[in-house]
Image 1 (tube, rainbow, N blue to C red):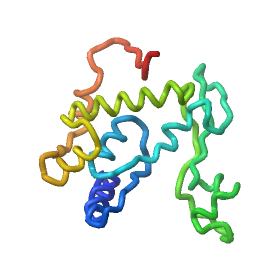
Image 2 (spheres, rainbow, N blue to C red):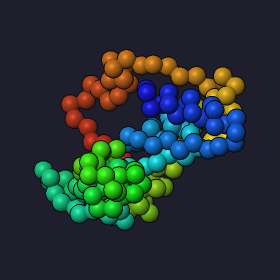
Image 3 (tube, rainbow, N blue to C red):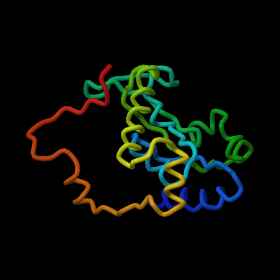
Length: 174
């Protein structure tokens, strides 16, 4: 909620001056993209979301039978020590303070197949909101037509998959 509030408040001010806002941080799925756009962002940074694609840098490895890829966010200490420190004014500092993370992400295949999935999923989110495009979404936000609700963890669980002994989750089919 803090990230959404920050994007919302900054975009309200930036909108007065015609300045676009980029939401960045913790975008893990298409719902986060839709939410970021819904609170006023004009664009969404998708670093770790795209990191598992074949075209992204990093080494693949297998963990418990699942193909994974190492991910190093540009604000991580590891990336800063390899040269991204200039972006964070840390290239001459002896002490580097992490502004990102390193970790692993699951293989997502080629970006050529993954981006159409992302686009279609965001379109579904827009359909749920009753809008066709970002400007319409932003107009509804500024007019007060677009409203948000806080859902408890119990409500979130209830809204997800339940009452099945097993299920398989596939992101997309080509």
